[in-house]
Length: 200
Image 1: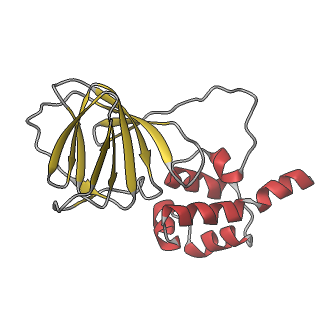
Image 2 (image 1 turned 120 degrees about the vertical axis):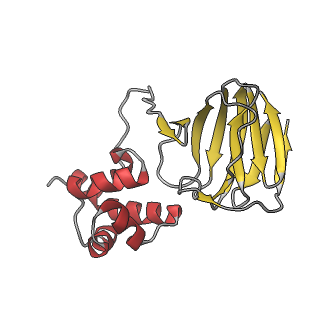
């Protein structure tokens, strides 16, 4: 193995450990999600086990990041970004950031929905920031039911029950930033008093 390749592989373990800790995931959780044993994951992170494609592919799927990000592969000279939309909860998320861990940026598209739709608030750890690009957004945070138009922004603690939808029967597009915990599964909860920040 050439020295350059060996150097890249030596950084994989610390990179995987930092990513897991940034996401707030335990080795047990990761073992369940990937089917890789806790002991193997631990040795991989500590450098006791050499990274292989067989181990890295399920980790890339679990973290929802490109394989290149796990190994720190250098970017090519092509400046184009190849976006891969993700369909979840009846909405479209287009990832705009590629680095593992930390705050993640998405373009979010919410299809037209009737204003009479009953909110189903959810919660997760972290903070969420959003900016409406087109259309009108219905944002429910705690017991507040707000409407944001294009050019308006909001930031809120995501431990507060929240729900997003479109207004006026038209599609809404927004930019959204999730804190490190924001990509974890949402859990149903009951409403309580919110803290909300709305900026023009």
